[in-house]
Amino acid sequence: MLNKIVLIGPPGAGKSSIGRSLSKEMDMPFIDSDSEIEKIAQKKISEIFVDDGEPAFRKIEVEVVSKLLKDFSGVIALGGGAPMNTEIQSKLEKSDFPVIFIDVSISQAANRVGFNKDRPLLLINPRQQWMNLMSERRPIYERLATDTVSSDSNKPAEVAKIIREKLVSKL
Image (cartoon, rainbow, N blue to C red; front, side, top):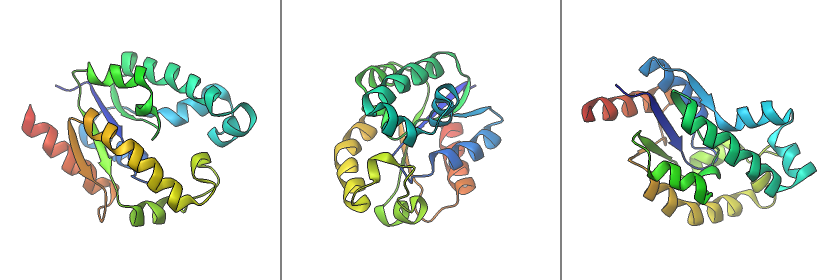
């Protein structure tokens, strides 16, 4: 049986909500790497970006994600930028657990994210920034993913069921 499932994708894809639903579907614990980073740093990610800069955030992110990929059993939702790090990419490529790319259109992502201030990379011209991020990140998400599921027009629980069905059919 599976002991780990990793969700990757852009801001607004619904990785955290889907991850919580998937953890119930699969009867596994759930963890969100961004929430873990906030716990460890004792401040919001947006504050880390402002106070310490993106490089400091990415350093903490690599440490936290590497530890989760090694030690945590359950469903892991990674922050949108985590798979861009080559060290994390290498760990995902060498893994024997499913890596699911949660794909989403910009119109759906815009509705969900509302392009708010807690998304530091989307502060200035959020729609354009999101599209720029995706043009850079999509090929990496697709390369790392063992499967892709769209979260457009589906509630998190529905996406979780689709993922579970795909995973169970491969066992």
